[in-house]
Every structure is written in structure tokens, then in C-alpha cells.
Length: 291
Length: 192
Image (cartoon, rainbow over all chains, first blue to last red; front, side):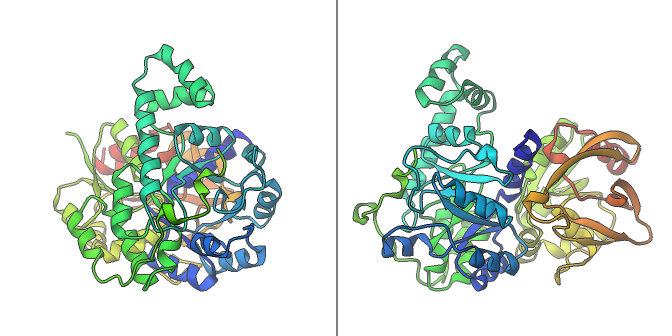
């Protein structure tokens, strides 16, 4: 991937800012998401909550199913491949996906190496729990970052923890003396150039979304106020009582996250939220996948 | 006098527009809901993003009719990518239509998916070598009466002007080069 393509890929993430990216499993769901105001959809066979329930190995979705979703909507379509599974990523690139999510939601294919994302023309988004992970993924070529959260739980606590941690570390690096940056690069196991960028600009060099456990308009507002530039909603929409209404409400809540009166109105009569599970109750900890 | 520019901040890369406008000496504020329209402003920017999302939120937040009226009454507008689609009279491959204040027919995602996104440089109005980034960009298929072409790529218009409306298929907000903003503020907003 040349420098221009890398820049264009980061640029596409900039166009998604202030938006909501929704997990969908069928063309019908994709249309509901687009009509509700999703800025992109994530095509996958099973949403994280069901992946959890089913157990076993979870892989890239059937390309046929992804193509069906690409044909159903005009907004960008993303799809997930397993961590380190560059052959799955090659397949997704071959069907001209708009964004690949190298995702901890699927079973990792490689317990050591992530995909060398510089070798691809299509952009990648990757999950991160802290600044070190985010910068390591960017170093590998990721054009967009999201918090890992704990997918499929409907519990926002890990997304909050990851967003707070990442932003606290960014503030710490931004306030460092120049001669302290070398040590920070060593400590976070990332290149000096990336640390230098964070120090000079006070932010990541790519867009950063919140993901994992967002289920209500209030959750979306919380993540935006904590510094997210947009929100992924996975199981939260299509595991709820009235997906179309909830999806619309979350979209509006992201745009007007600072207006509590509007978020209050949006939170009224949404029907049942996804039931959710606490992190203590789950067997598979997805956030531990990929460091 | 500093010009005050309203930036439509429903979704998309509005923050980048604000940075570029401020670099050129303008003051900016965001429009996210109807109450924001009570402020005074000299121009409007409609950013890049997803036109389906912005078009929908414009209506649901009751911004559509008041903004359409202001544009029809001659409010200077700078629109990029999704913004061009929102202003267009016709969208060739979409049943939706939005402001319809700009006499052009556009085609969404005309260069294909993200793999079709590209960068080039070209002439804009009387400026040479202006960098242009096309991200899942629309094309301008045809332009009607009253529309002036400001830039072209492969023989097709990529930026146009009609009255005080300026619409681009690409994204000057993503680049360091601020000449298009300076031109918009000087020639269109101030009318020098």
C-alpha cells in the first residue's frame, strides 16, 4: 500500500465520524440500519452475543452473505476477519469490502502476529484497550481504531475503561518533556515517530470509535462525552425489542450527545434493551485476544 | 470583519472544515439542532460524510426546511462530497432527493467502493495544482443552466458553482492546502 492509499484509507474513517456503525446479519437488517441512519454496516453471520452463546470457533462470514449486504445498501460495508488471518483478509479485499475489522470477536487465527495491514489496499479497523495497543495496530497499518470493550455483553464498562485509559495515556504523552518520549516509546513498545505524533497533536493519528457493549442512547452519549469520535453498536440493536426505533435513537444521540434533554426524549419508550451479561458471568474474555 | 461560518455538524468530517476555515481567519460554530439556527452567520458549510445519514438527520431534527429556505435566499454555501449530493437537483442512482437547490445531476459512489478512492491535482477556478481527494466520491453527471464549472477530472465536472452555492465532489478539508477556503471566503462570502 502506498502513502496515498494509506492516507485515503484514514480519510474514509474521517467521513464516518459522528456516526454509528451497526452489526447486521442479513440484507433486511442492513436496510433497517441504513434507513435508521447508520453511517456504515458491519456484515457478519452472527452478532457477538450469539457467538458467545454458540461457543466453538468463530470465523469470517460467508462471502456470499457479505455480497448480499453490499448489494442491499449504499453506505460503506465492513466485515470481520480473525486476528492474524491474512488469507481471510485477502478474500474480503477480493470482494471489495470497504473496511476490514481484524477482530477479537472472532477466534484468533494467530496468537502472536497480527496481519501486516500495509500489504493491503483496503483499510483496516482494529480494537485496542490502551494507547500501546492502538499505536501497535496503527504501526501495522490500521487506518482506524476502536475500543475493544467486551463485545456481546450489552455491558459498557470495558468500553468506558478502554476509552478512559487510552485518553489518559494520550494526555500523559502530550504533557511529556521531549526527552521523555524515547522512554515512552520503549514502555509502550511502539515507534518513536508515533509517540512523537501523539505528543505533538494530543490525539491518535487515526479516528477512534467506541465499541463493545453500547446498548442505549445514554451509552452512546457517555462514550461520545468520553472522547469517542463515533460508535459501533453490535448486539445492542438487533438483540433489542424494537431494533429500528432503538437504532434511530442511538444515531440521534450520537449527533446531539451533549444535549441531555434530547437524549432523555430519545430514551423514552424504546422497548426492551438487550438483556446483557456481566463480565463476571462470561466464560470467553474477547478483549484479551491480540495485544 | 471576521466572517462567521456555520458548519453542519450532524455527521461526517465537520471538525476538519472548521480547522481549515479558522486557518483562513473565519469564525465557526456547529449546527446540530434547530436552536443553533438562531445565531447569525454569513455562510454555511455542508461537510463530507454519509449523505443518507445527514439527509435523514436534517429532516428529523427539523433543520431541513429552514436551511433550504436560507440557501434559496442566497446564503453562501460550501458543500463537499456528501454536501454536493444534498444540494443536487437529482441523484441518478438514489430515489431520495434533498435540498434540490443546485441545478446538477449527481451519481453516488460513482468511482466504486473504497478501492476506487483516489487523489489527484488540478485547476480550480483560476488556481493551479490544487490537490483533490476523492473518497467514495460522487460524480457530476450533468449541469443545467446557471451552473459554472470550477474544476474537472477526465473531462467531467468535479466542482461547480451556482449563485452563492459552491459544491465539490472532493475534500479540500482533508488537506493542508487552504486556497479553496480563502477563495470561498473572499470571492463568494465577501463578494470581492
